Image 1 (cartoon, rainbow, N blue to C red):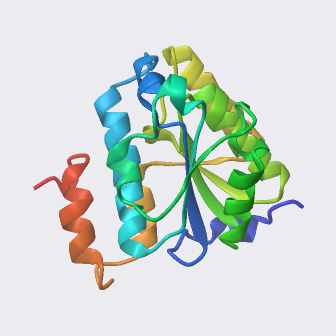
Image 2 (cartoon, rainbow, N blue to C red):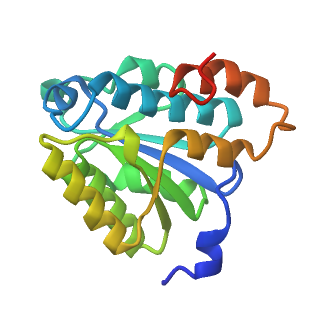
Length: 202
C-alpha cells in the first residue's frame, strides 16, 4: 500500500506513532566508527525517555544478546514491564522476527520511528521491511551509527531513496509534544531537551 503525500505531511503525535529501537547493545556500540558513540546513545535514550513520558508505544529488539550483550539498561530500564524481543531468527531485519513484528502491529500505529545499530544493516533493513508492509517510516538518524562514515552515509541515502523520512531527536520530541501548552512540556524540558543538544541545554 502506497503512502499518500498528505499522510506524510501529517506531523507525528503521541497518538499516531510508535518508536522501534533495534540492537542498542554493547558489542554493537563497540563497532561504531561513524560518529560520536555517547552522542548516538544519548539520542536514542532521549527518544525513548520522551516516549516514556508521553506514553508513545515502544518496541525494543535485540540480536544474539549472549554474544552482543543485552539491550542497554539506560533504555530498557525505562520500560521495566516490557519485553526486549531477542530475535529467534538471527536476521539483520528485526521485523523478520515474528514477536517483534507482532509487537509493532499491536501498537496499531501507521507511523513508526525507527533507529538502530548499524545504520546500513539492521536499521535499514527493518525500515525497508516496514515500508513494504505499508507503514510510514521515519528514520531517527542521529540515534544511529555504523562501522564507517561511508556505511552510515549510504545507509541513510538508501533509506531516504526508499521513502524513509529522516528526522532527528529534538525534532521528533517537538512533534510529539506539539507545543509548550502540553501538560508534559515541563517533564520533557527537564528530562529530554536539557539533556541533548544546545537548543535548550540549560
